[in-house]
Image 1: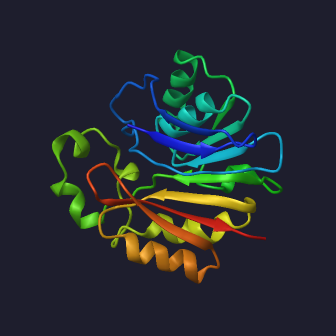
Image 2 (image 1 turned 60 degrees about the vertical axis):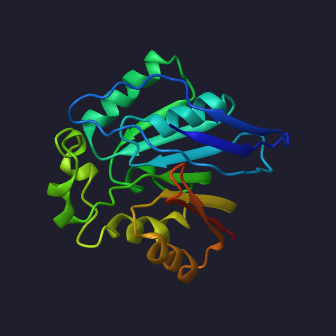
Length: 214
């Protein structure tokens, strides 16, 4: 389930649970978990980026909730991008674009976003074989493996995202269990402010968000 709570330029708080359909298929990442945040933009059109988009669930949810926004989803898997595009067509969502490539690489320069979100691979390499079969046997390895300590993608995204966030832009991650302190320290050490940790419906620290000020 995806939970979004945002503050739009019109200052109308929105709280919405994803109602679109994103089927699970072999070789495709599972739909994401709940997230929450408020955001404002001084510009008329919000611009949002979902890294490691997988099936496109987060990007599609944002695009559906904010039809006036421009939403982009990036994934290194060509199969994932194909299915994300199919999900966009199935749900008749027009304001989203899916791009094949590694994180920020396919975006080029002078791309700035109000929001960058990511549910990156965060499973420790030696824990993958211990996962539940419905995850281990369905998810591609590159959608799970976060390196020896599960933090490889956070280390890459946190510093690089500064180049792509607008002033007061928000960076938001889903976290693996036990990652909270390390990712919070990364964000603070790299110069982000207003670092906040949110719990999921099970009471687990699952979401971290921070603001970048130019």
